[in-house]
Amino acid sequence: MPEQTHLTGLTEPELIAFAGNLGEPHYRGRQIFGALQHRRLRSFDEMTDLPLAFRAKLAERATAATLTLESRYVSEDGTRRYLMKTHDNLPVETVFIPEERRDTICFSSQSGCPLQCTFCLTAQLGLLRSLDAGEIVEQIIFALNDAYGPGVKTPRGVNLVGMGAGEPFLNFEPLLKALRIMADPQGLFIVPNRVTISTAGVVPRIRELATIADRPHLAISLAAPTDELRNELMPINKRWPLEELLAACKEFEKSLKPSERFTFEYVMLDGINDSDEQARQLANLLNRHALRAKVNLIPHNAADPLPYFPSPPERVESFKTILESKGVHAFVRQPRGRDIYAACGQLAARREKLILPQLKQDRNAVIPG
Ligand code: SAH
Image 1 (cartoon, rainbow, N blue to C red):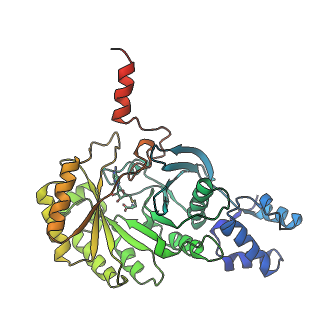
Image 2: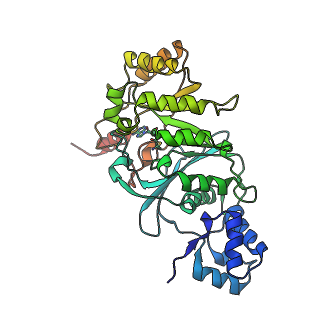
């Protein structure tokens, strides 16, 4: 069978050209784009406004959807995690996070991840492969359909975060293409201003992102205030150490809009990176570069068998107070979906729910002995 084209990964002009190659007029391409991206259909059979013969021709050469759902987990807090698989049987995870004002979808850029951050479960998978643009867009279509109903207009704004499995900046072109497709007003119409991409610190791509007019927001995972500790926790730091990373951030800062800031994420690991001294080092580091940034403090999410624990709440508070006393904006991020392995650093294609200590106790209570 000839290689099938995944139409969800094509822009509208590309779909018009695709239809043209099949001897069809331009409007057919636009029609398919609308069916996939606006009506969020996932099969040609559902595109009943296309002639039957054309649908048959499409089905021979192309696919409307390639991801299949393996499991769906719903957290006590309403967060949903979808474990899907690609046509070549690799795991892809996406998380839907309902929020008061708007909902957030966290998508993956790769299956697995090549970076070896010691505190992150995804690292244990290694890199399986990068996802293509269609596989990125499809995650969002899938989550929207599950949350609101197939094709149903989203009741309020949706934000996207590229904070799932993988390092987005090691899959840069497909990522940008996916963002272009999703921004199309004839399709999903989720503009880059609603998107935040997180990187572990791929310096050349941070500099490149700054040159893109219609770019998403940027978040950078820091995890340590010194090279010594960061080398240990995030080996990517050996390739691009803190001074180089922050110099790139300084460059990126020039592209910020007046009210925009970029974000540093700082996972808080009990006894490792959460002391008052380390808070002062972090504040001094950011102040030395005079960066227009804020820091999100993320208490570590359980990642058994990794040897880490979350910093206790009073430690997080003390860390935050020190940052603020030195003029650094700091926020504590509330973890979502921890019980279903949907929180930051927990995406590792787990096929079970997490037994929270609370639940464990309950269980012990009913098991004699
Ligand atoms: N590779 C990119 C995208 C992943 S974002 C990056 O590193 O930025 C995932 C975020 O979760 C990162 O900020 C990471 O530092 C954080 N994280 C990883 N493992 C975690 C864990 N177990 N608990 C809390 N945060 C974690």
